[in-house]
Length: 277
Image 1: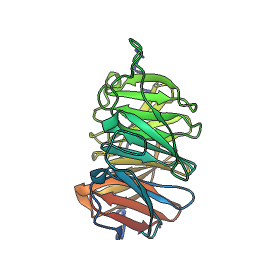
Image 2: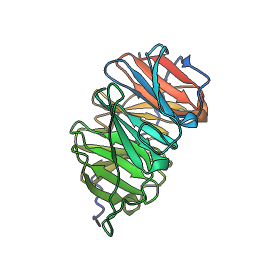
Image 3: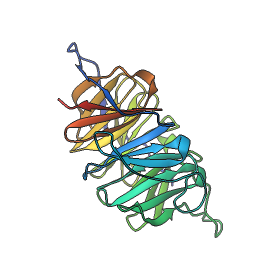
Image 4: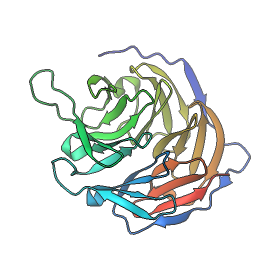
């Protein structure tokens, strides 16, 4: 579907003279293998995608391991290069199983519920689909960046494929590392340090520049948090810069999760915790 590009909002983030708040990070999980995504659920479970072992782990916020699921494979409960996890409110867990061209869904007890795939309208088969980043909104719509087609794909709350939109029409630099949702908007972070805001139906609203490449986005309590290789930036309502924190983990960071009292930041082998001020 071709859409006209209309930019109605522009916000440029410029570092102020005030120094950002320095985060004190402490490791809570170590010796992990290629962490690609972390997620904090309201029931205080922390989900960690360990891509190198084709599984995800569940731990407490303090780092106590509680459970795990997965191994390499193509059947239910198995993964091939999982990339992202969204555990929503803890009742449904969505895992982007990129190498198997699907998103798998589990309930809070880790029972398999089904898979989301993109249909090929030219045949009865499913289309090639490489979900690199996913996010689920409050209406249970799932949005996925398809690395193969550079499309933003939307599935309805019933699991039905709804539509896809080519992000290159909006000059969004691909590949995309992270997607987040807030209300009726979808936020996409790109490697140029730009956070783009779209409607849930794919219309372009505007963007915010955060100067450094966006590594991850996370939605928490009315804000979209942006992780870069040096900072953690709060976008209030997704558009207005709030608090800015700095970290010393550098370009090794891979993912972000936010709770009411803590930040969780991962590198390929370690998950760190930091107190929110």
